[in-house]
Length: 56
Image (cartoon, rainbow, N blue to C red; front, side):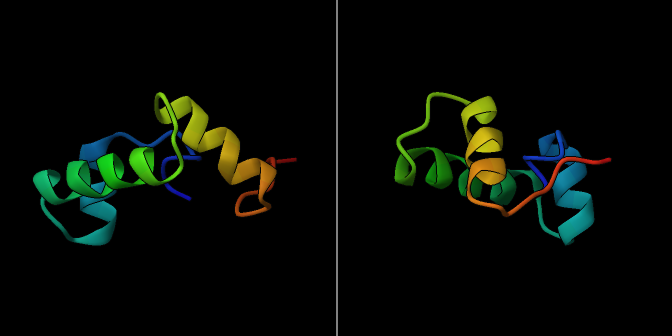
């Protein structure tokens, strides 16, 4: 959800109280599992699956 909201790795790590390295590791795993090229595709997947709804 945080990637879908456009947060950076450092913002995500602060929000979740984890290190930036751990955040990068989780992002890399998401990219691999979802066969996504980049964070934009992860954000699109979050919207398409209903994980995030557009702000209105």
